[in-house]
Length: 174
Image (cartoon, rainbow, N blue to C red):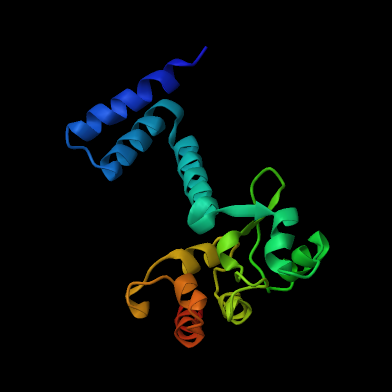
């Protein structure tokens, strides 16, 4: 039997949308009320978790190490340990999902196998950022910027336009 939340929320969201509410306004209202009911700490944790899940699902999603071997190895055989070693060595991006699973964003891989051109060099620069953490590469690579004519750094790397991305990463890491 479905729960009340699952049954009522879609109808409430449609009614709010039809009444002119924006997704942003609904998000703020939801988090405000989540804070009232569960407290500010739980509301912040929930907001962070939702943002994290959005990053993991962005631009093709994320895969486990077994699936990453197929993307990284291309036509040659690749092992899970090779993929994990590449991540530890700063050649690939990986992040733990909170359940202990190591996930690799799909967008970092070249269609021919291996990482996108310039990814390793950009990651080396980003690691110099004074507040580097596992999520910084996600936010850096996925966010469009005026410095790249409204494109994201990952889109520029897909077009082998590496130099502007290196400059952007250097400015961020200063």
